[in-house]
Image (cartoon, rainbow, N blue to C red; front, side, top):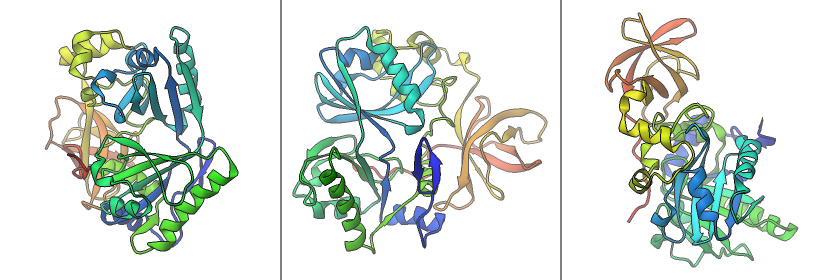
Length: 362
């Protein structure tokens, strides 16, 4: 257990190694308790206007109970936090943000609220991620809802056989595997106990398929999937364009230029690629694993060309994988050197993701 954002979080569970946990999720089902994440609701006639100001999302382009990754933006176009936004209705939205950015996010949202007519609330509760190729098979045993009709990026309120109140189910996750995230109410002792019972029943009834998984594997899984971690690949000094997340700005928002935070900077970067000198990309290597802030040099070690933001051994592919910001002149397939413990180590620039996603789509 380690302290994180005011919570005690599991890095590993008993009798599992990091590699065991990682490979389990890639082949079976891992349960992640991510209840530390901050959950929000935005209700009211101008909820959409607020969200389309502080993020580049196009909410008219989402159907009801559809969701999308997005980013909270500062006035300079930097990323305050990444988030998932779900549209429950024309005036009703659900959002999940990172625990480590809790105070910063709340202060930012509060500062933006005054100009809009809406109600913003945060709430605590169980948030459980069920991830892996057998996630649907296992979860289906606890509901009469036909989960095969719920696709990646869609959500629905469903009834679980173990719980008295409906729960919010989203087909999504942070591992690159198929899976679900369940937001379970826990406003009283009964609901809290039901959440624990649901968690434990899966572990006890299907021990050959389901195991709890900690933060170590969660990080290596998202790294292989090419997903960003706030404070590493994303910061307030990095725009979504620089982070290779241009796809988060839909064509409609680019054409409308409706004034989302930092839109002038971001749209200029999309139109004129010379405004950015580096971008987020992948790195593969052997030997000692790259870590945050390791410097990257060109092949002969004569010039610094970038830096590592996250790195880890890759249980799926072997060797090491990392994400980095590198001079955009350095192309995929180029050999580079990484400074690790005072020595220059061989590495190669690679395309993201390292492991193809296994999302359940129509």
